[in-house]
Image 1: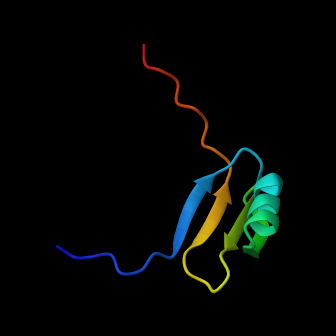
Image 2: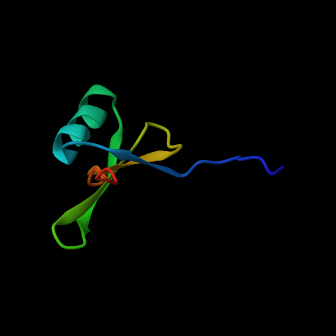
Image 3: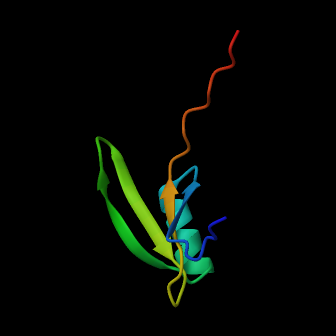
Length: 69
């Protein structure tokens, strides 16, 4: 079975991108590596830890799935 040897990006759903950016950069010391418009009213925000490694894409949560029934 192939092994994972590298991880590039992890998508993290957040309630507010501005607050999440502030937390990761101010509290945890991450760097903001991307903050650009994405689609209609969306944006792509990405932070990374000091020294590199996997980055975190801070994305709005997906709409809750409605229960079938």
